[in-house]
Length: 329
Image (tube, rainbow, N blue to C red):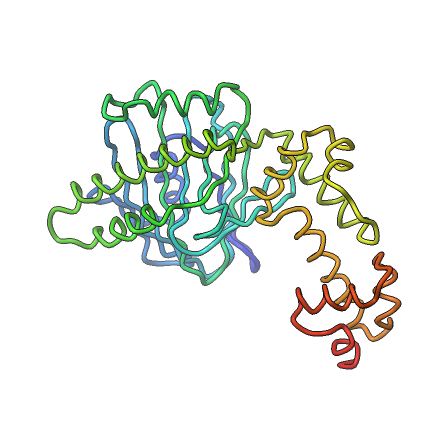
């Protein structure tokens, strides 16, 4: 563990649950008892429980840190071991190649499935309770009770390269997760009840991924996809005065029209059009707040030929007219 005035940093080797348990214990101490690790002293408060059911390891964790906590997840180099992470409460950021992706409960990026073949930094905010659940499994070791789920996961990860999927959590799994976290405090019977809920959640997630595949709404992000989408974002932010079409961007970056739209939305939570307009209005707001630019200067500089359209978009996104921001200075 490395700690400074700004953050706490630890490194964990991606892999089986034991790696996480040992990694957190080595960093923060605590006691392991009755399938759980509990840390009650120091800058981090942690409660992690871990179980195994028919070939699937699962952990559910509640964490609170006085400082931002940065967890570096190093690749495990085992393409057969898959990792499914679900956020129940709170938010944190995934960082890969200097690109931050906000993972948030209840959002399009509340669930992350990947094969552990590329490094990820997890940045958890200070003084915020985070609850999440993780599953770790090898499809070859799944029991017969999982029916066709091994075939589905094998299909999603046919290519043995770094690959991840982002998706949302269903209302049903939200309810099951709430049950699971509440069961940990039961004096009796908590293990079978927790295991039953975990089995339901895992199965429901498999069925959800299958539906997304059938609807062609599930897009896997390879390592190079992260770089492409990051480059698209950089181009937009560097050229806010220009307009772009999806076709132009897809041709320039060598990715299909459909995949570009899906990947961008999965990674940043907004469509390219929404992201572009919000970025333009953020820049407009910044310039107007300085008091050094007029509304017309800002509107025309950002590529608007009509000030009424600029004002309308600014009001829609920022909730006030640009003239109100300019007058505030």
